[in-house]
Amino acid sequence: MTDAAPDPGRTRVLMIDDDRKFCRLVTAYLAPLGFDVSAAHTGPDGVDRATSTTESWHAVILDVMLPGLDGFEVLKRIRARVDVPVLMLTARGDEMDRIVGLEVGADDYVPKTFSTRELLARLRAVLRRSQRTIAAADAPRAEFTVGPLRVNLDARRAVLDAAPLVLTPVEFDLLASLARARGRVKTREALLDECRDRNYDVFDRSIDVHISSLRKKLGDDAKNPRFIRTLRSAGYMMRAPDDPE
Image (tube, one colour):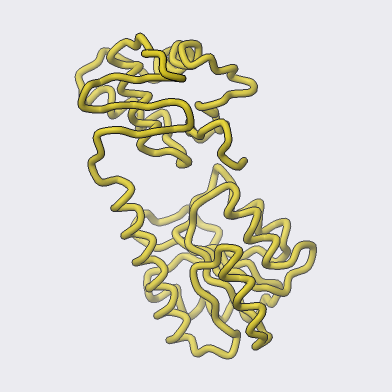
């Protein structure tokens, strides 16, 4: 399993499985096909790796039978924090396992008796579905709603609890960018690039100043925010007050 710096041109997959030999087999098969596979061998480690703010994954391959936490609980915790395609594996052919896995949020479910070619086909299928979902989410929209907050891009107007917000142009564009990416991390660099594209006179740390001002207008407490959350060493993320942690 690779621990080298990720290649942006390759597909990053996290495999959560306590069978190290099986992980090596899958890695050896997928690596020449454009996949960088890393492995976690316990349930808790899998949750930590899958939801880390310093690592990102295109897909997760998750075994049901794991030490520490079973695969169903691991999947619940992953789903509560990140949106990533998950392909579940099991050594058991129990139909109930498949039903529970799919109900908990697995994108597909494969018995460990599969061929490597079947795994590749199913992995590529969940990745294609994920890309279509992201493309649909990123399609142009005139308005975004985040809990009691509404952001109208055409009117350049933001309303919180039915009260209009008075925002500077930079603040509005930062708010719109975060609202469009609801539930996903926006790095400081990405926000900075978007501001520069609009010819605002901003620099690296000034993004934090604008975010701080925006938080005040949203009534946000940086230590216990309702909307804009700081992910250390990663960037900012917007969530509604009732979104799961």
